[in-house]
Every structure is written in C-alpha cells, then in structure tokens.
Image (cartoon, rainbow, N blue to C red; front, side):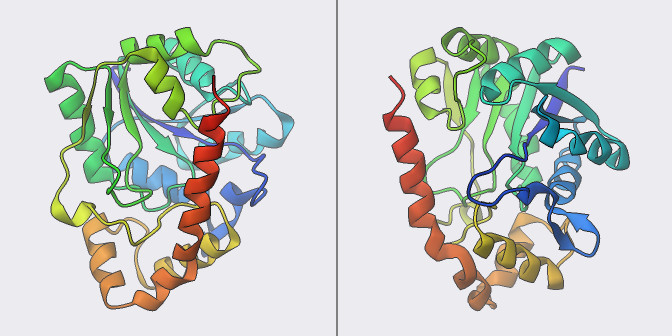
Length: 247
C-alpha cells in the first residue's frame, strides 16, 4: 500500500464518550461519515484504533464499511500510526481525525500530491483553515522521526503539535483555496453541541457534499453555525494546555 488515509479513532473520549458511534444521519454514525468522506480522497482507508476492549466495536465498523483496521497503542497515537505504517507498508498517508465529520477530501487528495512533489516529511495547514477540514499528510520518514521522539506505549500524544516541533520534520503548508480559510465555523466533534450541529447540517445535506458546498449552505443558514461555534475557544484552550505539559 503506497498511499493511504488513516482514520484515527477511539471510544474513550472524556468530553463526549462514545461519540464516534453516535448516530448522526439515519443509521449512519459519526465514524461512518468520516470513513465515507475519507474514501472520497481515492486512497485506501484504514481505521487506526486501540487494542482496548471499548474499541472492539470498530472491528464491526471496518467490516460494514469495507475498510481495513489496525489496532495498537491506546494513548500514543504516534506509535499507533508508526506500527500501522509498518503493518501495511505505507509510504505516505493522510492522518484523518475521526472527529472531523466534514473532512475536506479535496484538500486531502491535494495534500498527498504536495507531499510527494515537495519531498517533505509533513504537509500541515495554516491557522486560518476551517477547523476540521484537514489535519496532516505525512511520509514514512516523517512518521519515523515522530516515533523517535514518542516511542513509549504510555506517552500521551493526543495533541501532536509539540512532538512535531521536537522532531525537526521538513514540512510545508497546504495550498488552500480562499473558501477553505474560515475561522468562524467548526467542523469537529468534541461536545454535545457539535453533535447537534452535524445532525442539523446533514439533515439537509448529503454526507458526501463537498466542503465548498457545505460552506455555501451555511452562509445562508448561519443559525446552524451558532449551535456549536461558541465551543471553539474552549477547544483551542484545551489543546494549548495539553501542549504546555509536553517537555
């Protein structure tokens, strides 16, 4: 497997437990939607979850979505990715967050192309990207470098910003369209309000609707944005607090 989309997910969330398996549209759960959008990148999709018992359910999720699954470290998702890369012999991968129910598959496809063209370890994003549109594209060499700084099973790598800084990765920022730069909407699932947001959004939109079309829809339905955007400040503060603990 040369290129892949690795969907990172687990059930042990403290803010919204079992959020990945909550139903969002009909019988489709949050993780079903993320997987189906990840498939739109054109790359094989692999669920990367933990060996914990509460994550056994993702075996069934993988089967019904006809995707592969890898199970590894619970706390250290860098180790989980590293082991997944080796298991499936991956050269380049999109790291798709299982919380991002409106993942922009067009950016994902573009990111793998830029990763190869620029011969860097990592493609990241600017701060003004729409939250939840894209996370990272990383090469095998990039994963190796990350793993060299976080190779213990018990290391918590829930937020990897500091580990990226410590790993001295060669990186570049994804090229974005103007509409992909928007700090006033939130497409990630961490709180009850986020769940309500996605249920309302996909009540009127297909789950595979493009990022551009979703934003156009929200432009005329701003009351939906207001359901969860007030949580963005707390979300960013929590990430910053986690990074402060990394030495």
